[in-house]
Length: 430
Image (cartoon, rainbow, N blue to C red; front, side, top):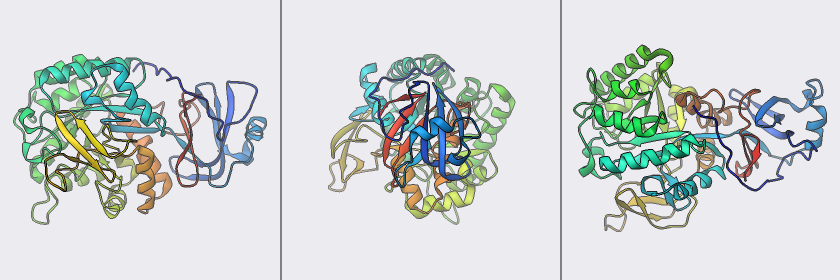
């Protein structure tokens, strides 16, 4: 992986110490660690790296008493989180990755989410003709080379037309390993995941799409599928075996499931389908399930139940955001599909008063964390599912948690989990 380049941005003074040394400063408040929350904790940053994390009362003994003291007592409710990691994001701020013809347009979306606490973002494309996929992937690889995004995700084109959601079924294809290799070449090592439907011809089997994805260093993701339970189970078994064979070359040891429940054959007691298969595999440590816990894609009870069933180590909270994230209601584009956003909900513009299928999200990942906590999920679990767990899918040990030695990605919020400050690699950005 290439080293991350810090995006320029204004320096925020929120919850940041006024230490004279620009390389050493502290953040203090309710500190969210992977497994617990410190009610009065501190995070000390030395340049681009986290130097120390612990209870504020222990800073003196660790040699950081002065810098933590200069940070001052935080306002009530101030919360310090790790930088968030979004595995599935199509855009924001009015810009769409699938429709961005140049880097500056794509950067609009990156900066929209960065300003709201997402310090590692995977740019997602949708099903499109071959030449479009290759061109967009190559452009996004430039952003990944520069460290501005964490990688590229392709949502298609080997998907089920019966579960196309907000994608164009006319562009969906049978599994084509050669196209996978062409996309991987265009991505130059930055292809993180690809969503595939297990029942589509050419996806499973020796040398098929699943095997090829693992071979090129990407993670297969089950989604937009009408598959029965047994077909999904066989795809998970095949993907898991391929990842095991790859060993240390594999980005992750687990497959993922693209926005579980959405764009899938529904769960039924006589037809459990892909949802049950993915949940069972997640419980066994073979799959990480994405959840778009934004209050629109899933009922809060569904989100809480999945966390209870498989645990935060097997859940990646994602936004599935599109261009309207952070924007007003109106008309937008998602690849070839026109989208209308009303009341903050994006739907395919099909001419009907209520609109068509949900067409991505309009939330930032911090909003998803807030909704997840409101659903009854403990704060540490919700944050872990939006940081450490997805970082593991990326194969990144340098981001995803407030731990000494990791990159200094820090988000400071108020008690309602609304952003006050964002720091990426030690630089204040929002």
